[in-house]
Amino acid sequence: MPKQIGNLTLYSVDDLHEQLGLSKMTIRAYLREGKIRARKLGVKWYVTEEALREYFNESTGGTKTKKKKPKNYRYVVKGINDLVSEQEECETIDETIECIEEQAIISLFQVAIVNRKTDEIVELIKARDFLDRHT
Image 1: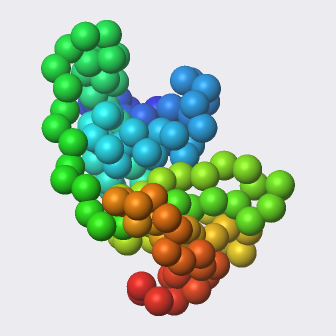
Image 2: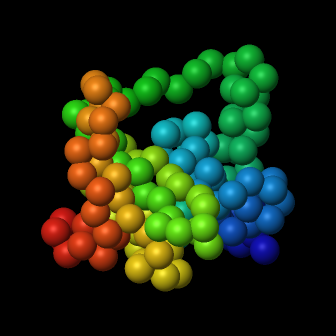
């Protein structure tokens, strides 16, 4: 259920997931990519009604947001078996850490480190090991 603070209505990733029918990983990807403006309060992302309107106006022909300059690697967080079929692409190590920490069972995930230019997987690492290495 959205949070109401005065005249401001804030929607969490869970709220958007329920109301829009998109996966939580897709919504987080939209937030990271800047497709939907959001603010992080504590460990949760929140989106305003205004930001949702902007998103829907942009997707129907409004102005586009600028893309961030690509880095050498991208990180793909994905399930290690058929029980977890979702995957999420992250641009930075910090985003990857955040994505991993949002998962209920970290041991069911791994991270593919992919070279942007060649699209080759440089390393495939367990999510727990990725966290140990980068935190």
